[in-house]
Length: 282
Ligand code: AMP
Image (tube, rainbow, N blue to C red; front, side, top):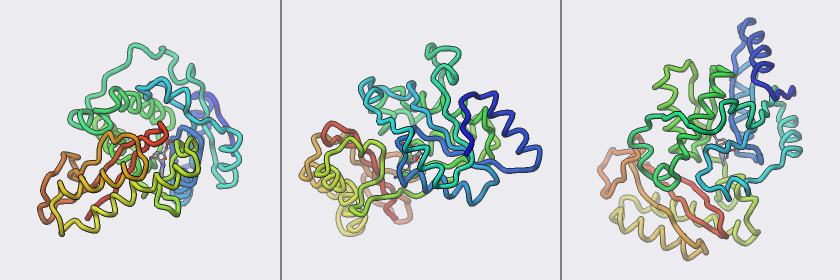
């Protein structure tokens, strides 16, 4: 695996691959890698000539400074994991390298409704920072294929909007959520949980399954309330949202119409750590 820290060097390397007709797959990450990330990397390796993984803890997407400061950094382990996965290129730029213009003022991306709900509502500015960094990375790497996890459902929709809005020649591939045996969605943030909280945190997945399994049996609002109760009962301190939405628009849905594709999404805090997860329902 070759490690790059500068945009210019990476551009030269990738240009030579493109000149030879090679395809490029790209997996953006913030490090603290786990098997969820590996699933994305494996898909990219299988479908492209070269896979680039980036590790960059992007300061502009953290609306909460403490969350940024506490974000786990495990770079040596990450490099080991990437080498073992046979990844080709690791891009590990500094903040100065990605933001030579400084962090402020930030450009504005028009994300419409997506920015007014769920993560957009609870983490003001988060998706602006995500768009800013992914746009920069896509400009540098110009990948044929981009790989992102369904775990960040709304993020996938935001990035698809970015790609479409800027006419970028990149195809977004969405990879199913990888879970622990308990059902807990793998996440770098899980590293901050005690063993007990890690077990209890699987309640989000179980509550989502409860909604899925009873979709046709009980009114949606009743299912949603019971799911929220299950999550709190398992030891979560606070729920930002547990909500059933239209799977394509993310508009909240209060009653089930046959044929409408639905997804349930939750953000909740356990031991002060904010976890998100979702489950397509039909
Ligand atoms: P992160 O490092 O958390 O920013 O995640 C980098 C990429 O990995 C994003 O596209 C995430 O959606 C994806 N990802 C994170 N956790 C999982 C998971 N459990 N399953 C699948 N993809 C994931």
